[in-house]
Image 1 (tube, helix red, strand yellow):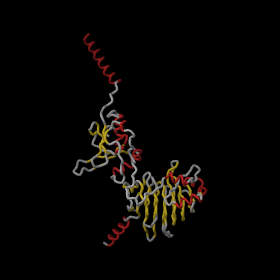
Image 2 (cartoon, rainbow over the protein chains, first blue to last red):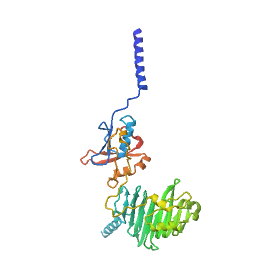
Image 3 (tube, chains in turn purple, brown):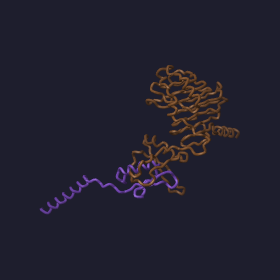
Image 4 (spheres, each protein chain N blue to C red):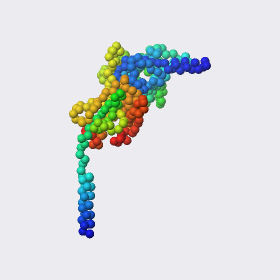
Length: 79
Length: 308
């Protein structure tokens, strides 16, 4: 019984500290870099993070720029 | 068979140009397509000028229309119908100056319309400015020469004399008292400067300080003898003042050349602000077929998440 109680307490402490760390800790600012790359022929642009396209879509330049700002705000890439 | 040939000939005549555009400054579009000096315009064409842009449109009957910046007109009708000439130009917004040099016969009809007014034209020269004021359409009309008959919903038609001007909203309120006369000095200025457009009104409703208004309007048409390409004002993407403040790499600023841009991209660029107000955004994809065809798809701007 004593062992069960001690095990239960230990689990409770571990779970609580895990929950607290998730609740109070802020994620570290990303060091990933956003990149705006032009289509080879057309005046459309693709957004990349660390040289990898975020999707297979292309945008007009102001839209691409706007997307990088939103990604930075969402901590997906550096501001 | 003869009927088919006649129908073909008639349709061919209608498809021919009814006007030529010239003295383009900046960006002027027909629908989605940028125009260049010498382009022919057709019945039904919708002409739009960008900021700091202007052009001259000459109809095949020598009627001249000077189109000011951020102005929009529709060449709705211009043809002969049973021996009578019929012209209807819709002024959707902006400032224009019209010169109709030829004598108009009784059975001819030349009409310019704004959202509120219809201007029935005889041989004349006049200025129109069409805009929104207080959420409602408003038009300023000033007659320089000739004769102009004004009609519209809610008031009796009347004729204007040279040097007279009025505002449509004011006319709705006070009737003929809204019809005013320009000073002889300002009127002479307008007559002598054939490229001058309608000036702004001051708070009292008068057209004052005409010289200042025209200079502020920056009315300049491109010198047609210039061989170099006109400067196309960048309509999007403000350059960042200091690149070192951002970690984003790659193409950070880009100037679209509206004259060379393609239809779907051009439309997205030109109408971006308007589309965003309507919560309309676009992305483009290239199909994995042999032709690598580009398609444009529409999404709501506020639906954009990481998947974008």
